[in-house]
Length: 407
Image (cartoon, rainbow, N blue to C red; front, side):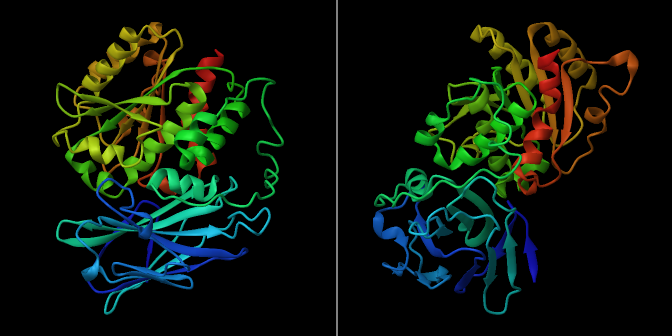
């Protein structure tokens, strides 16, 4: 048996594949969504569940989804497998993540267990079967929705009936109920709930971390720089970069109420700048990065683009530039100069390492007493940041930034 981590993928054959879901601790329904190239269902018939158990080669029998991949129509690009808590069971939420077993004839069994859920999730998208070139792959997802089927409906275009009201779960000890942060500083996440309900759990977790660091009442313009070096290709394909961007967007909802994060791909002398928003975030990174050539990531050029954009915007709040790096920079002296020159502008740089390359330069930026930068930090997000629980991920993301703001 091969175990997948969150964000990882594996190749499938065209034989029928069975995805068995095992849920502990609550009653849950298993279902599937057939999705087109736009990430939406073609019609409500593409929701396969106990009252509509089969559609175009995909069927649900109890807790198992079976997909006859050879029969899935060409217009279906992905099949999402999800589990939902019984809405008639008051207060029912996922805590322990379901176990997934993925089997095909004459192929090794694959398993996946997402990190445990802590934010009152009532629906979880566990995995996706998706087309790749002429074949199929499976991706471990583990995305939870505290907003129930309504959140799934918004993201995937499904019409669902209103769910019976459930008693809200009590917050876990030591979380939001135990440390509410400064009075009046809580950010209104109604825009996230309306436009991106799937991001509500990580946005709430990010808000708790900001409150714990006493900066819940501070605002900042959040930027995201992504390495587009050729060695990052697998991480873009495996959804790892998309998942990382989603978490940064959820953090930004607590720091800037415009629901938008400028995204810059560091590749070549003219970095590609676009944006990811609450109303378009799903698969956004995949849509954007295909417009950028693979090459040697030029982080200095991307940093200049971010600093220039920030200055031109006329923003009065500081800038928090989350800069994902997968390898050493081409021009280390230029990076150091940019760090020094942007300090008076109110720009804080967080280099987040994940990828296959060496990252000693970023780790050691402040190692020398003669070259100390007050506006920079490094966070090692591991080779698979999706496997890092939200609480630990956001703590690593904002720790140094919070200390800088307080100074």
